[in-house]
Amino acid sequence: MSASTKNSSEISQIENPFLDYIGIVSGQMKEGKANLSLDLHHHHMNSWQITHGGVLMTLLDVVMAMAGRSLHDDQKGVVTVEMKTTFLQPGGIVGGRLEARSVAFHQSTTMCFCDGEIWSGDKLVAKAMGTYKYLRSLKSKAGLVKMGGSD
Image (cartoon, rainbow, N blue to C red; front, side):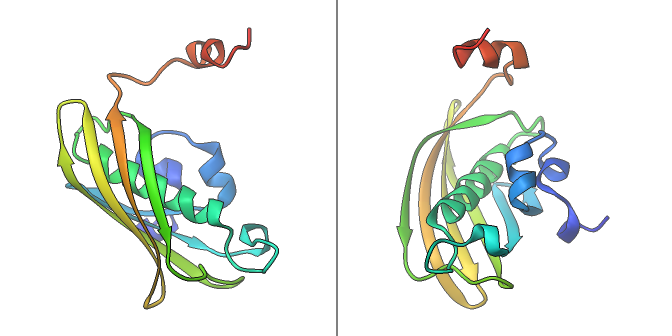
């Protein structure tokens, strides 16, 4: 399977059913850089039939987290501390393809700072900056259920 056809779980080595459901396709994730893409379908659109802002923010959040995680051989997990997004123009229509790119521009022992962009062809659609906290390890499923208030 080529990199352009890998789903999000295959490249990041962490299962993420939400990203697989959306249809995000991973590209590369190495040396503080990451990219991914999304082929746009009807369920990605808002009421104006352009890409929903939540889809764009999800792409940005994921690609920036991937860039930060790529700085560690063990691809330790990260959690989003904050994210600022600027929407520059409509994000695409059904049948289009979005490309998300990110660079980790600074890191400390516990945090990583990243820039992200979404492109639709040669048009810059959105930009973001995010702060991510490195996790020592991923929580167990039982621990996550407990954190969510369920038994």
